[in-house]
Length: 70
Image 1 (tube, one colour):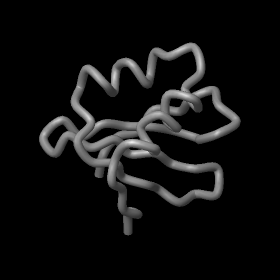
Image 2 (spheres, rainbow, N blue to C red; image 1 turned 90 degrees about the vertical axis):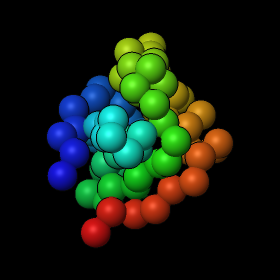
Image 3 (cartoon, rainbow, N blue to C red; image 1 turned 135 degrees about the horizontal axis):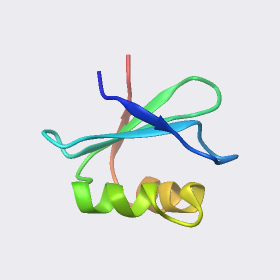
């Protein structure tokens, strides 16, 4: 299980990164978790430190494959 950090966003609830798999884990306010592939540690740091985490997540969402956890 990847540890996620709560974020101040109306778009998503928390995000985390799996450096071994290069995956971004996004928990939505609904409780579902999406996992986006090919996201390295530098890109994750860009997302977590962005002025708008939601917009940064959307940029990843629009350019990466994903699956739902569980």
